[in-house]
Image (cartoon, rainbow, N blue to C red; front, side, top):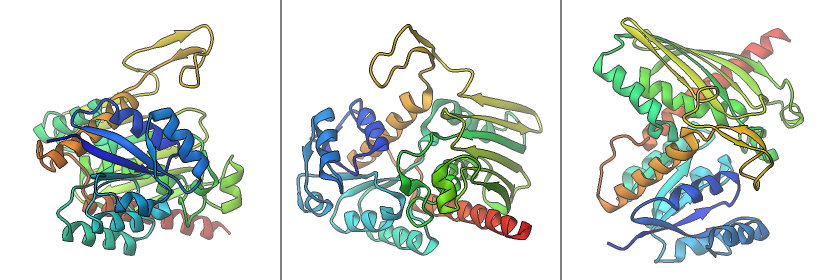
Length: 335
């Protein structure tokens, strides 16, 4: 079989992460891009050696494009995923699946009606420390799960749409959704949700009345508890996670305890700042592993298994929407 030919829809920051991941993937390659802003697409194409398509429709009309990677603002995900499936393309869609449960249900239905591969961008399922945590839970090594705590550090948004509830949704919908999927994967469905938070630092969050910091607590159907602090204002990315069970505990720290460290006396391009830095497992392995899994599924090398399905993505969305509603209700009660 020839390589799976992928086009990326949207040419912003996360598209660059996926482009670098796809450059290391076997049996697949990124060949094209498009963006609503032509100059952005041109710069992205020059950086990664891609063809530029004027519009999303032009990508879908090209029979030589096998798959699309949807990396546009969150509010566009549902319509573009459905259109791509109906055009006969395999689809990898960044999280979240949509911004509403109705749109999520439409995507789930479109996925069921199509014979194309549909996968969602929850790279934590493919990040080595967390796959090991899943194995420890499933094997019973740490006993019955009791509590999970996590601190989630997201980078400050690079565009105004991240703050807008109608386009990005704020820090809970955009960033905590990764961990909504993760805690469901590890601990199962959720019965109760509570949340506190607000716009503490960022002007964009204040302008759109959406949170830039929040704490979300959950009670899972199996009895386990989880608590997550999510922020856009720490000035760095990554997370810490602790999981406690009846027979032991496990910690994953991708902030202080990186697998490698780098020191440079002066900056070396945009990717390598001066001083200490810690190339980590999420960026180096998580994104690459999920893209390899996507291509392998298209090629018939592997089955669904580890990937987040449309139903998983819809469940994660429903969970963060519950958290956002809980936060809104808590804030309203104070007024």
